[in-house]
Image (cartoon, rainbow, N blue to C red):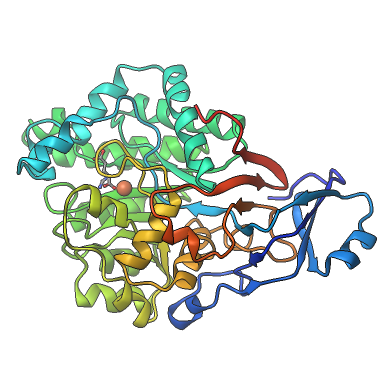
Length: 429
Ligand code: NIG
Ligand code: FE
């Protein structure tokens, strides 16, 4: 996408570090993730919404006397974080389930009792588009306040043609009305709706509805860039997932997959075989799945906050994935059931302390590889000439403080396409 040539120039000066993540405009795999290309003593010029030059402050001041100077006051400048996996469009939160799980009722059992995703589906169906937009807006502003400048949003709490279209139209309105870069994903295969579960042949009927009506309509209206499926024992089988994703591809959508989240069973292998843009979760991935992703172009998107919030001890084998040569991204999975967090810095903490990534690997996972997981690695994810002016300024002196002060937000300002996105003194709700 080309930003309008508005002639506006911003010159960022006085940053103690500029984490550029500069390098190839594609997913970084394996050892390539070790270098976040951190620079000191440089200024950054953004013009017409794009990074123009990185260099000596005096040189840039004289080359761009018209630029508005942004004083970074000794803070750290990073590419805006790319949150490539959220379910940010939902109605009421589901805090009652947290205590139930603490008392020993597993996530899937709550769903079998009609709670979980089913509860969010009942709730969303009863709301209109305006209501959904109004509920999502402050939540997206909170995501932005943590340094996120790009956010993927999935539908998937509607599960009828009309309710999925309503959700995707709400996402389109949010994208038009907020400074964040928003990428929409169709997740009509988030669950088998209860009304279909209760009928013999209901599962097959719902899969047919997805393939024959919902996907063609969503694609024809241009409402989503990706399609996703919750491939997990008890939800969609590998074969059902394959059928839905192949139909989505035939209609021009790119592919994502919730793969091997809880028990697993071949999701990662399916994502790799289909050439999906990303395979997400992977806490229960097999050795064969790790090998398949390492050989493929599919980004392994890890969502460590989900496992923590569910109270599970097993995290995705990030080290084995990176050391095997895969490209790993980090995302919030922001949703009302398993990951009600809007904090990207928390993910950096979990990325280092739980997934055993280095800080540089976590930063690359949060930026370049998040962008690759949305097929926009040529557009955002790095502070390098030609990339979109998507930047976040953090009130820390060393980028290693971002994962260190865990539970804190240090992002004070951010920009998308060189335009203000978040500013700390704006109310976030
Ligand atoms: O990524 N796994 C499926 N979807 C979400 C949970 C959605 C929900 O519980 O509402 C996830 O964990
Ligand atoms: Fe998810």
